[in-house]
Image 1: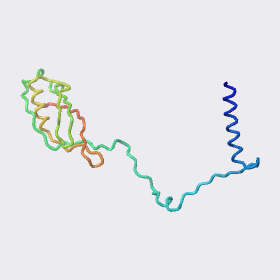
Image 2: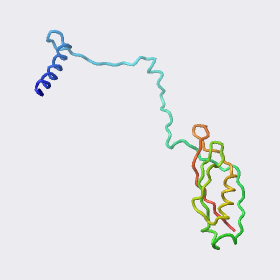
Image 3: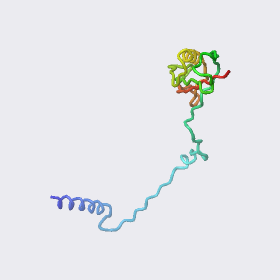
Image 4: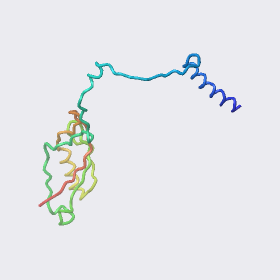
Amino acid sequence: MRTILVASLLATTALLNAQTSPHGQVANQVASSSAPAAIASDIPTSSPARRVTSGVTAPQLISQRPIKVATYEFPSEDLATQNVVVHFTLDAYGVPQNVKLVKSVSPAIDARVIAAVSGFRYKPAQLDSWNVPSEMNLVVNFTK
């Protein structure tokens, strides 16, 4: 059965070649291609600029609320190590949404930071001149 199948496949290719050459003569076929002048002139001579990055511009802070915390409210005296990290989604209008704590200092300070960050306003991230939502992490450092 396999030999019949192989023989029929070989015979098919031989018959196809025989059909292209009339009466057993060898036919020389040359493939050529030429583009019409109108199409060739439509192609720009310089290649368009390619993006190296995603093309998204970073959001910019427009307004912020001050965060006032007394020194005695911190768990330790060293303010350099006392920072709060928050994560939020900045919507297409520049308003923080879903503000969540990543690193906490104390419940009282954390509540003030979340309230203040929720009131921040940004110029939103943009892609091709369109406002787009973006994810942000914000580190709030305290100084005396």
